[in-house]
Image 1: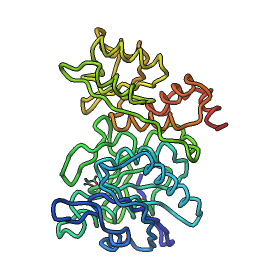
Image 2: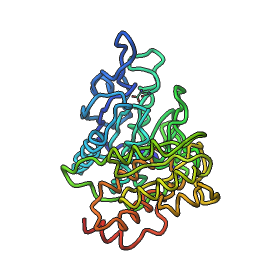
Image 3: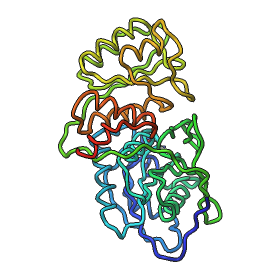
Image 4: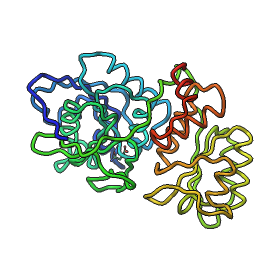
Length: 349
Ligand SMILES: NC(=O)C[C@H](N)C(=O)O
């Protein structure tokens, strides 16, 4: 599928949130600093595209919080409430871009695109990648329809779901290690190779709902339940357990999962391996026992995005724990077998 634009004027709104694309040297390291207008001024703008800027916040994305992600989600929805807007670009630090993009994607119903981009080299650098990434993101935001939330970086187009930062400093930091990219840019065209597979989107969380604590605990040799139990004791309403291999831990950790689930804590099982699904293969504290203890398997989602699915399920209005678990399975696993009871509850929310 090749997308090219006619000459109709397009309006794209850039929501600026910081990251390296907006970073300047502070004397001891780089920190997000440049305004959205300054960031946009570095990039060429594709023909027939008009750009407006919203300065939402300005942080290195390792400082991302649920409150900021909720503010971003609302800003995207308010922007798209204007029918004259053709698309949205979000400039974001690459460290947690995969989390914010997936959070927006889970709540995104509009056919108009939301495109996340950023940079690996700082604002104003002679060899900077920000201007080209921003140009490409504007091009995609002005062109495609019906593909959900996308990540555009280094000439490639990725789906929000499944895409993670796989390289710390390289100029092509994003990939879906268990899947394939969605498309690429070149010669003024956007080539889309596949349509992202997405579950039905969920309504925006109600205003003023406090952000639930959702922790990530990683297993390793010598791992014991101390940190998992500490997360529950700290008030976590959800915990992502990052198992070894296809999602394995120990009998002691499986017992801790069962105790947590009994208390109403939602537990998701992901893996520290970079690609492939978690699977119920092993007992003796493996995924077979963790699932029996009540953990929900994350499919191919890596820990950061598994946590976002859990966060979104906890923020959703659900009539019971069972409904929330069913919603969680849908958000983790993609569109297969959405539970009709969940769909009804979500529609009524
Ligand atoms: N390349 C980047 O954007 C990394 C930066 N530390 C951030 O996520 O804000």
